[in-house]
Length: 339
Image (cartoon, rainbow, N blue to C red; front, side, top):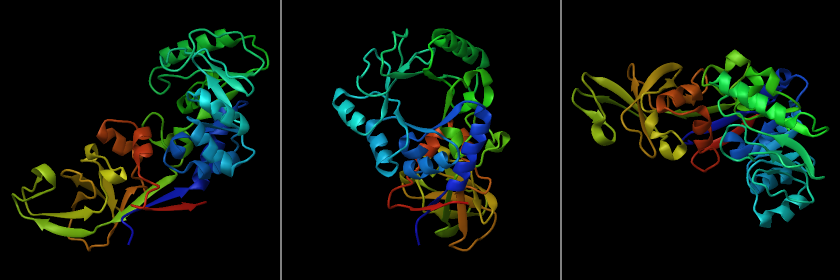
């Protein structure tokens, strides 16, 4: 029996792309598939996103782009992160589009100029005159999910700086910007987290018509009864104050179930159960309502158990949980379906 299994529903990715395309209105939908498609599999989700209406794919690095290019020979691919001088020729041969964010504008291949409108990260303070290779102007919203005032200021700065630039494609909105700010949609939107059915604001993705695409299943490998005063796990962080049944699930932080997710809930045979004690490298414990048989199914993500819930317990965001899952190692089975 596999320790756990990840199931990626490409049908959900495709439907999420369709939902985001409707939200984008007249703008193009560009799918962000960096970090191995947010842990979902870059090539698989790229195909699904294109089938759902996306017209371009966005990645962070040239190696990521080359991986996608091998499978999708005709797709439009934009590399959004910094590119070394030694990578430019390879990028040109692979028909990639690059982003200029530090004043250097590569020659001989399509380039997008990135303006820093408030993110304070990659980006130019002022836009230079576009060269003949420049095909687009972009920026990035810093707090689209939480601060409408600052987002409005970024949108206004970008629009003011790019008005009158003719045929160049302007793209600014991320997932939250696409869903929340019509004025940010412009010519194209770049959607990542929402494509995978994870809420950019940490809420319920169904509120925006999105479907989680990833499911994570395991099982109870061991069931035992703790007497009062007995504990489970390193550091004795959970000590039973009454007779307590616990189940051991063969998943831990090496699989992406982080130590700071103690206290979150999983579904054991469909019933919510709390994770207790210290999460180990290869195992975690759940408090059970009663004695259950070893082999009883456990759902870590899916059937209403959401990545957003785990992120709240860990004090982080769904992006970090999703990209930290060890979905492509031999520790777990990876299944792809199109439902």
